[in-house]
Length: 406
Ligand code: MG
Image 1 (tube, rainbow, N blue to C red):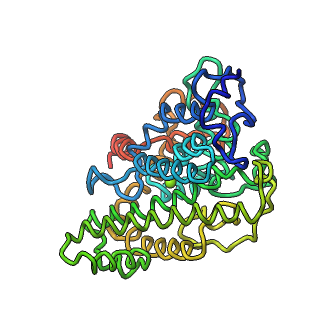
Image 2: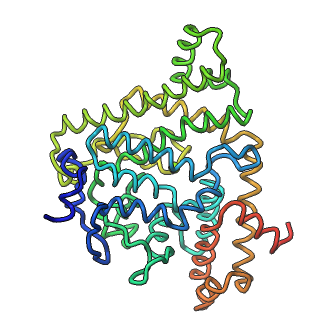
Image 3: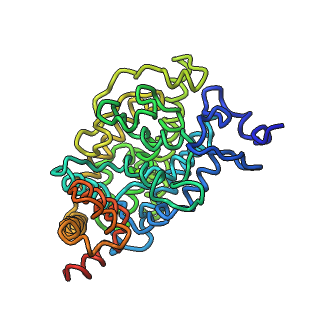
C-alpha cells in the first residue's frame, strides 16, 4: 500500500479536484511523508517560512497606529485560508492544496501594500525591470527561503508554484519566458482559481469591519455605499429594533460573507456541471470563458486582466463586489488619514531605494556582495528591490530613520 492511499481526503475528492497522486511533483524529488500529503507538507512549509511570519508586520489597509486588533497581512491571510478551505470542501476540491495556496497568496507583498508594490515597480522601470508581487512570491519560495541542506527554497510542489503565478491573473509566455514551465496556455486547477475570489470575499468584508472600528467609516456611510450590506442590515434592524447597532452590524457583515461564499460555491458548481468537466486535465484545457471586462477598472491592478474562469461569482454577487470595491476605494483606501500614512511609508521606501543604489555599502553584507558583484546597475536595482521588498513596514521606517535621519 502506498502512503498516499492512507490519506482519507483523497478518495472523497471530486473527479475534477486536484488529486495529490496526480501532482507533477517537486523540483527536487523527495520521499513521501508517512502521514501528510505533499500539499499538506507545502502548507506546513509556508507556515514555517520567514516570509510568512513577516506578514504580521505588513500593512493590509491600516498601519498599527489605529489599533493592534485590526487585520494585518497575516491575519488577512488566515481569513482567506479559512474561507478557501470551506469553499474547497463544499466543492469536494482538495482542501490541503486550497489552504496552501491561500496561505502563500500574499507572501510576495512588499511593505505598504499595493502602494509599495507600485512604487517599487516605478523605481525599477528606468532599469528595464518590473516588480510584481506574484513573481516576487515565486522568487521567495524558490530562492530566498533557505532552510534545507539539499536545495534552495522550499521545494514546493508544481501545483503550489503554479498557483502562486496564476491565482489572480494570466501571464503570457512571450512576455514572461521564464515562466514557460507553468503551462501558461492552460487554466490552473480549480483550487487555484478560487483564491483570488476568496481574497475578494475576505477583504470586502474585513475592510468594512476595520474601517468602522477605526472611526473612518460610519454605519450610515456603509448603508449608503454598500447595497448588499444595507439589505441585510435593514432587515435585522426591523426585526431587532432595540439591539445594539454594533451587533446588528456584525450580523449583517457575517451575512454578506456567507452570501458571497455561498454564491461562489453555487456558481462554480453550476459552471462545472454545465461544462461537463470531469478531470483536472479537462479544467486545464477548458477554453477561457468569454473574456469579461474588469470588474473594477483601476481599483486593483490584478482585476484588470480578468479572464473568466470556471470558478466565479454570479451576476448579483459580481455587482455587489463591484459596488463594495468602489465604496471602499473612495471612502476608506483614499481617506486622508489612510493616504497620509501610506504616502509617508511609500516615500520612505523610495528614499531607501535611491540611497542603497548610491550607497550599496549600507546594505547588509549578503546583499552588498550581490549588488556589487558586477557593475551592472540593473542587477544592483534588482538586489536593492529584493532587500526592500522583504522588509516589514516597521523595519523599513526604522531603517529609513537610522540611515537618513528622517
Ligand atoms: Mg490578499
